[in-house]
Length: 503
Image (cartoon, rainbow, N blue to C red; front, side, top):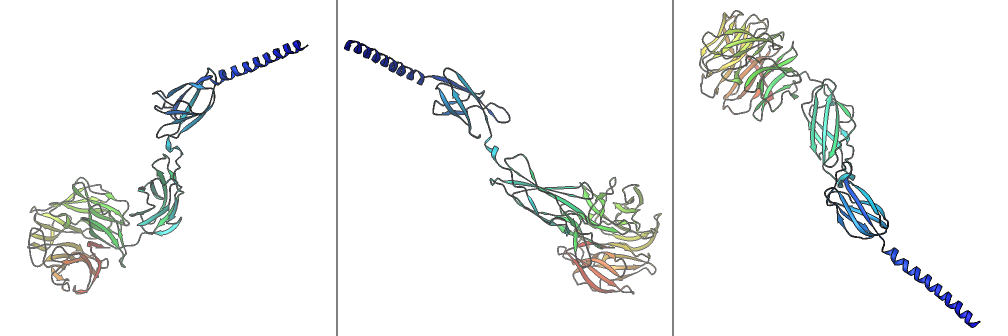
């Protein structure tokens, strides 16, 4: 019995040892099972393969880098669950999960996003001023809005303005600033404005809502004149209270404005390349049009040249050296009207209201030996106001009843290459008596009166007064005229101005 029990016990022990041995022998086999991990890395959105991407795993295994095709391979990885990471400068780190199986290949694909992919665009701009539907906004006004960027990126703002009249589009750009001063807007128009914001990361522009405002109505400014700004002549208008409006750009040379009531436009001289031509514009400075083209305006000194508009606004008369031309106000029908018989240059011209005669000023190439005379439409001389005088003269105008001719003359008869005058005075010439009346008797000594025009009611003369030193500021003055052609009150109405007209 003891032997039997002993034998059974030995068998049981042997069986137990076999089970333990078998169990212990399989654990090491499983623990060293391995697989392979392969993959491809491309750029998100373009699928361009990315080279030199660092590939690592968690739990940790070996680290490899992608080749030129964006491919990689990790061999001999222990079986199990892994988190695989892809890293490359300029891109956001990417993660993929992978299960490594015994003697198998697991493949993963990474689509890496550019590092700025999560960058947020600017905040939508909010328009502040002028407020929506604002009225009577100045032609020079400040646009104000708010804006920001979540990441503090630099913002480029694009501002657009349109009006309700035509296709004009004004576009401006500013970096980071949320204010912009716009000038040279037009009278009486409704403007719509919008601000777009774009940072240097995101491609799309964020647009504000559209706001609108209306500019002030066009004033009835009866004075037009020139002011020199940064070396250019710039045309302004003004009312009797001194409220001024700039009509031409400071970057262009525009001068000698002549307003025509019938046409409701202003004609003026301006440069087109190397030539000077006649242009016209609306009273608010809009709708500028070039009138002359084939024959330019020219003479001994462009600052001294003057042209004339017929009373009805239909034609313009101007000179080119020794020739006088007429042209329709729309630029058609250029005609040669007159040519001087002595070869002198025609520097100024004015035509009577009824177009029955023309007054001309002629001079030599240096501006002297001045003659002022009138001709009928056929070119026959009627009046001789000045005849080959020494010194400078000009400033022609004709009274509405054709009885008087206005002009200025330097009575000192001084002559010099720079055309400086010493004692220029304004005269009214009575055609009936061939008598000239000096209306500058009240001007200060050492000053010049010139560039004269009759006021609309001819009870005054508007003129320019300045020191005879040739460099002082020029001012525009109204001089009252008495019935006997003597001067009355002198009133300075515009400072730093010249080449005035009063219609």
